[in-house]
Image (cartoon, rainbow, N blue to C red; front, side, top):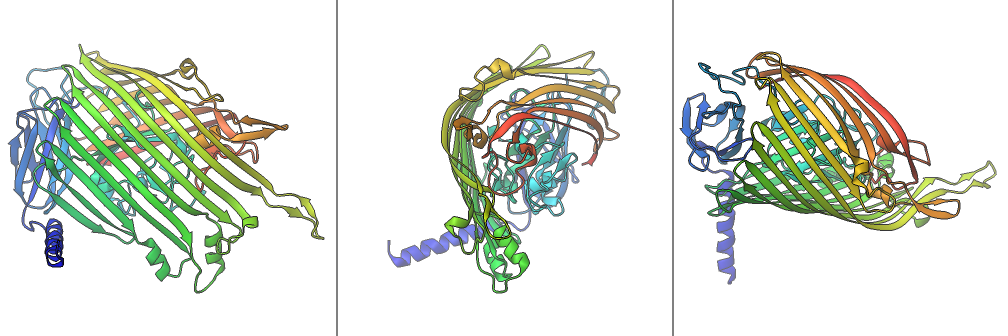
Length: 637
């Protein structure tokens, strides 16, 4: 290719990208897919109406709809269908340029009544959801974008929800999610049904928080937070389960956007790859290091992240999804032009970090006569390298206080089935995980102590571990629910069991038998009362499981018992209108088998809100704890 041809090709490419960013200044478009919430079957003939303007359409045989030539602005979208409860999406912001794509789930009317006029959220007294009838909160893309101070960071916005707090030890700038008194490590995250262990840059190994979220808000359709009464399909959760639902790519045309904020630049594109395949892709780059250099700050945080989703409609009943998310993080230091005590503290209080992580997964979903099944295969890796010295600007090996070189990888295979029959909803499934963990760790826990004459009184206390652990994790679950008493009472019960073949942990799944039950009763069209009880288990961090402990001249592994938590929750819900909701909940959580440091006597539940890693120390697992409180929430669409 000649230079002239290459120049023409590059100019054409730049022109196409710019046209994607500033496309169509006049009108906007909205498209989507309407499905049954329980069976995921597409709903043809559903009525879709957009207000204001009363512009509407109906879905085709595949449940798809599209509205074009819309004026940009904020709308309310109502979707209704025969034998289904209508659903309204408020505050739907539609802009020019990019077409908004939605997936809308409708819930079937279990009990048909004569002479009922359907309007709003409820047409008769009916219990709430069979799965997790309480302790549920939801966020939409617009909620995240509109949150003051959130800076389009999903993790930061989550911290503003009732019962959710941020990390105290690491400072208010961190995204440590602390729910109802639990540790940051007690939460699990699912992205389109694939577990994603890392959702923050500069993540604390063994915990999960970090100063900046990885997930791109442009990908997210909504976020569901369950802070109790977890569905039995989710393992390793003690405080919460987050379900992030991503949008599908636009099937009609290629589109994109470019976002520039005070800390980063991000580019997002989506569109069709073929007749039956769509994609979403994004890349984000921080420029904090340049900003901090201009401000003469000694720290240099730097990160990249990438996100991808493809959706292939193999046929009317089979869908194949691929997701990917990855991050590259670097935290280093530089000399300041003007040294101050504050700047020197900033240099020496944190380690230098080189970290990368990724999750990639593929799922195959097949619709059946009464439901569907899912088969998912995924792999995730965290590579964590960190160093800290007494003087990070002038590192001396004899003055090193922290060294971490660790990699943990999980290969996961999940299969689950959901069926609906005779008013029952039944789900069951199993999971197997192959874990590969390598760890080289050293930390000076206590500096050497000298007397007034400079004589050594006590040597430095250094803990170190050079280990690897490869083992298998496995588990299974069943969950069933049904509405009775003219649909006023919803009952749901589940059972889960988990185990692993690590020698210092538990291989018998019956030892981690995890029952849970919940009930919701509709007192009237506007009032519901709910309650739940459950026992939940979590495997300790890999850093703890693989740490070799020197006791009385012998080398033994840390204990690896599953951490146990018992939840009791009760609450009341009041729905005065279609758009307003009040909830009042009381909760009680009791912990046992919690790891406690043998070095300082502090529970690991109270660690993990700082950079580096936790669990790399000798522990005992006899910690106990309680958390209880009352939450009040008022939400308005």
